[in-house]
Every structure is written in C-alpha cells, then in structure tokens.
Length: 599
Image (cartoon, rainbow, N blue to C red):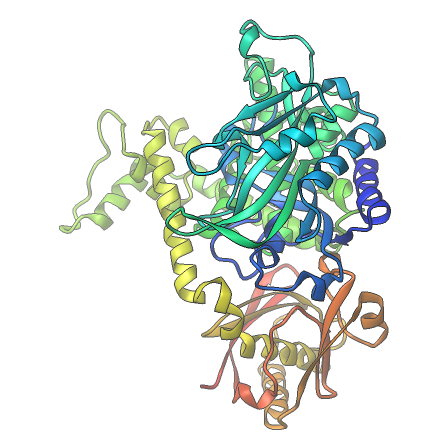
C-alpha cells in the first residue's frame, strides 16, 4: 500500500467514519511558543487547548481532532544513517480534548490497524506504564487491552518508554500505551528478555497512545490538567514500512526515489564499503527532505535557533559527498514531487527553495577551503585579552566548546573539523550545542514575555501587517502576497512576493497609505465562518494548508479583509503611527520589510 493511500485511509477513518475534525499540519516552527525550537509532535499545535487556554469547541466545534503533522526532532540528527532514525517525518494522530479517553482511544487504534489496514493482529504487542513512586501503574489500560490481546503480549515499562512529554521543559504529559509490530516473530538470543523495546530489531513501535492528564511545571512537579485528553501519534514512515513489507523506512516509497537519485550521483562513488555508502545515502535522503521543509516553513540559514539546525543538517548532507558538485536540483525536485500533492505550497516555493540551497552550498564551498588551523588561531586571538594569536595545539586536540565555536563562527561542521585532522570530545560539543539552544530559548522567553501573553504584546504589530499587506497590493499590484512574518513588541517583519527592489517613491506611498488608515480610526472586526465562506466573501488567504474548517476573518474598515488567527487591536488608531525602517531581498522573488509603530 502506497504512503499516499495510507494517509488517505487514516483521514477517512477518523474524519469521516469517526467524525473527528481534520486539522491541517501546522508549521515546523511552532507559533507563539518559544519553549521549543521546532514542532516535534502532532499535539504541539493543540497545546493551548490541552492547557485549557483556548476553547476547542469554539474553534473546531468538535472535541475530537485528527491530523497528519510535519515533525522534526533534533535529538536524532547524529543517529540518522542507521536503519530507523529520522529528523523529518510525518505523524498521523487523533486527539480528544475532554471527549473520549482510554477505552475509545485503544479501540479506535486497534480497529484501524486490524480492520482498516488488515495487519495481522498476532504480530501486535502492546506496552503500558508500570508505575513508579509518583504515578500508579496503568491498571485501566491493562484491563482494556486484555479484551483484545493475550496477556503475555501486554508488557510493562517505566517512564523511559511509557511516559510521554512534555514537548519542552514544561507542558502536558502523561502515561502512554505503545503498539509494537513483531517484524520477525523470532526471539533473539536473549529469549527471556526479547520483547518490545528489545534492541535486537525484532520489534518496531508504530503507534503511541498518550493519556494526557497532567501538566509538568518548571520544577518537574505534576498537576492535574483541567480535562483528561487523548494524544496519539503514529509515524507514517514506519507504517508504510510495514504495509510495503520493507526492511527499513528507507526502502519505502517515501525514501526510495531519493536514495536512487543519490546513488546514481558519481560524487558518492569511491567509498570502501556498501555499508558506508548506504549510510551516506540515508543521510542525504533524510536531510534533503528536512532542509526543504524547514526552508518552506520560513526558516533561514543562520548560526542560531532554527537556522542553526537547518545549516547543520544541510552541511552534513554535503559532507556525505566526495565532491561538492553533486546534483542538488534533482534532489529538491524529487522532494517536491513526493510531497506536493499534500503540501501544495512547495510547488509555489520551488524557485526560492532551490536558490536558497544553492547559495548555502556555495557558502559552504568557501568554508571547505578555509584552513581549520587558521580559523582556530583567529578565533583564539579574538578571545585572548592580549589579542595575541594562539597557535592550534600540536596534538590537534581541541575542546568540544572550541569545536562548537568554530562551527558557530565560521560554519565549520563537526564532520569537517574531524576531516581536517582535529579531534574533540563529542559530549562536550553536544553540551555546547544544548547550552547555545537554551540561551536562545531563554532569550525568546524574555523577548516575547512567555507564551501566554505574547499575543497581547504584538496585537498592534499583527494589525499593522494587515494594513501593510493591503497597502502593498494597492501600490505594487494584486500579485503581491504574504510569504511570512515575524512579530515582537519592538518591530514587525513582513515578507511578500515581489521580484524587485521598491523605489523610494513606492516605499513612501505604502507608508503614507498605512498612516492614513491609522488616522482614519478604522474599526477592526472579527467573524467566524467556514473557509469556503471566507474566500467567497473576499477574504485573503495565503497559507491554505494551515487553515481548519472554521476560520477567523478580521476586517479593517473597508480596507482589509484576511483570514487570520489573531489577535488584533479594536481600532487602527491604537497603532499611533507606522514607519518602514528597511526593505530588502529575503530570497529569490521575495522582499522583506521591517517596520516600527509609534509609542
């Protein structure tokens, strides 16, 4: 069964048969949530509903939801290359926010696998939370599962395996029950301990049913959530592996085309063993997908936050080739061809994505020519109070932190530093990376004032982007469309489709129009309707795959009307004034404006 059909069957089962509201995948960059850098699970976009901050009934008119969510996990970057680890993947999930709980979640999952997908139930095992000194054993789940599977196929594990969350330092969490598929039906040499989670490769976990009933605070303490919720996640790639009878996810139709293209490139020739070449092929296949989707969701190459992760994986991809002249364009086109039927915006983004990747490839080519010895000496000199050049160690050993600093300063990847003959402590390097990410997250928390009050702080900027958008379309034409935005209490950033630099006259005209609308004290009104009704009413929408069935439409006088999640001010007079501080290219065919509001 092809992966496209698996997605469709999952959607039909939950959305049509079980009447769940189908919610489109959110961005890989979590909206208004500085506690995490990237979306790691299907429940992340529903976090405010799990916490009771937003009403699911108001936004979806249904307590039961389902989705196919794009996900990215940084913890597996260095493990990609084996037969199972991925950075980018899709998670099929069903959620119930104060609706059904363990009994129905287990029933729905079992029926989908056994009755809809026709998986042999004899090959399915389940695991449950065995309990600890904080939370008791999940007796309820055991009782439900005993009606479906033999007792010996219900295995108990601790927090490491059967506790999920939170998705960050704090948030929703709870015990979980996993469904595992027996690939071989043959115990390994350690027969007595060969059960789900055995490292012999006999089992693969396919579905995790999380019974979310707690909130973990910054101290690690658990508090009851306002309602008990269900959060499940099943990797599309793993399910495809089972349905397509493949030895690993890399032989499925989600990876095979990319592996074939990479294998045909002469830049990957010359490696000593087939095992080494296969490892490199897997890294290329995973990392090109991850790079394309991060770029498509607005991440830019940089040495911090999400941009650091993007640069790290793309340059790691390049490191797999003997020569940098490999055919990048063919790989990008293959990713777009695989996923455009489900993420149509990739087709519109094709030129921008390829341009951004080629520029980064050229930049890395310059880095590859840089002598690590010289970079180390320059970096050491900049950190030395006497400003004296410090030669590199004669034994070519540097600290993990120095290795990270070489990366963050010059873009020298860990693989490249090793290739140049330097050695360093891997754990120290990882600690430096984590420290860097923690500082970035802490800065975001301070900058945005935390998740809860971020919206209120940027409501003025949010309304200003709508005025700016409408003004740009009046001055430059209706082909202009929003390509992204970034807001904070100090300024707004707005990306839009346009192929040339704005003249001073055009910028002045846009600025003047926005300020006129501010002075006109236009009312800002909100209405909720179906997506189709919104479009029919003339509302603008530029991220079609992100919208739920019911959408919010914000209207500003008779000047602007857009689908938007908000929040906004009540009247444009609250903006006081509008000033463009810069206008420049963001990427091919995309311009970027930064502006500030009066105080």
